[in-house]
Image (tube, rainbow, N blue to C red; front, side, top):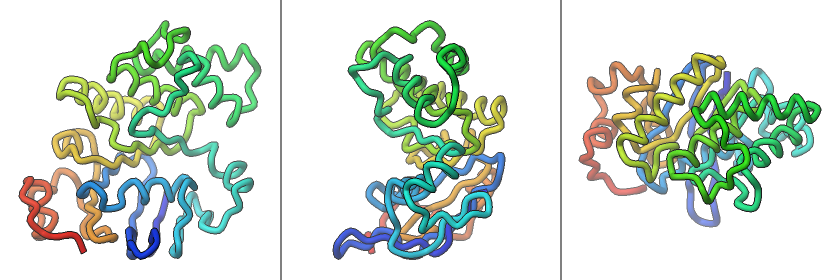
Length: 247
């Protein structure tokens, strides 16, 4: 379980998170939605230690990691969490296989043979078997997304966090990625946190949905109940009729 309690983060005079609170339950897929620039990426990057919050608490499997040193976070927490960047973030100068191998060398004490097997398994899981020796620039947009997911799952994390996994993809490819996320949760027992603008995909694969607005989570609900909420801000957003101004 990951618990976010009263999280605050500002950049200069700009307040981005102003008391965000959220709980990610083991085994679920939870999607955080909200307008562009509202702080969704700041929230998710705070969880994985890429951004240091100003105040509040982040508790992962019972450990308050908010004030962990980088070395302790890397040793005790990072092996259980992987992150899929919006743009993939694969090294263009390295093959797909080498990109995945780099993640394994950093996080897992596997020998070369074991790493090779893990690379092949991870690529098969995302339906990209046989692309180990291809460079990222040779992949299509959808293949690049899947390759970045393969790198993320290679370490067999407990938690997998996605930053806008379907952005820039057409509806067919978006559906492919959504189906993949859903399948990996089941096959690998992964707990997933997604930030997204895609309401259709959110409804399809998520157990719960949360709206981030003005630095706070203003509503969290089961996805099956998302169209029946008594909250104007939430309803305006999911219906594409957002008329409120940013605070």
